[in-house]
Length: 231
Image 1 (cartoon, rainbow, N blue to C red):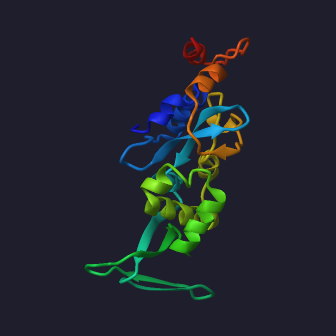
Image 2: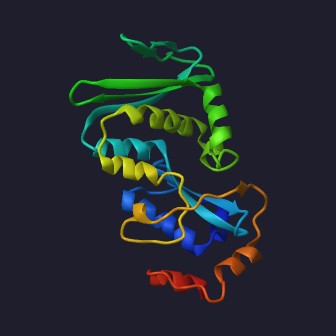
């Protein structure tokens, strides 16, 4: 990763995030956009910890693995595109991109079609996405929301529409790992409890991070890499 603050996160949380990515078969912090490792400052423990986040391409990959859908798409609509949608008993979704000079992004939508012929879609304006992210996402002020806003917008509307898709429990388990911060590892990272943080985006404090990692009397976890990281 090119984010130097990841090097200041606790070894436990960084290893757990990497294990989560490995369990889901995702490559974090690469141009593939499958997943991200995001550093956060934890006000309660006074140290920096690593959060695992799915990218929109990782979300699509998980949905395809379920075997229940034939098409999943997320697209950004720009101001000069032809775009029409309506909901109800006869829903309509039609998008024709402009050939050139598409203008500024205005909407984002996601759709799926099942192998049985069923389908669903949802649409959000870019203003609605931005408001949602500012309200609910800890990482809005940094990370992929700032470097890949349109991709995160696609992910937001994908998560909304896939709630209505007939996907298997493996997808739901993978989705539950999105946005988690864990400080332990196990054979099934889904079963490892996560941590809810109060987050601020101030400068990180390396000396406090080192003190938090090297707590006297801390019990060794099942993975011996924890003990190695604390040496």
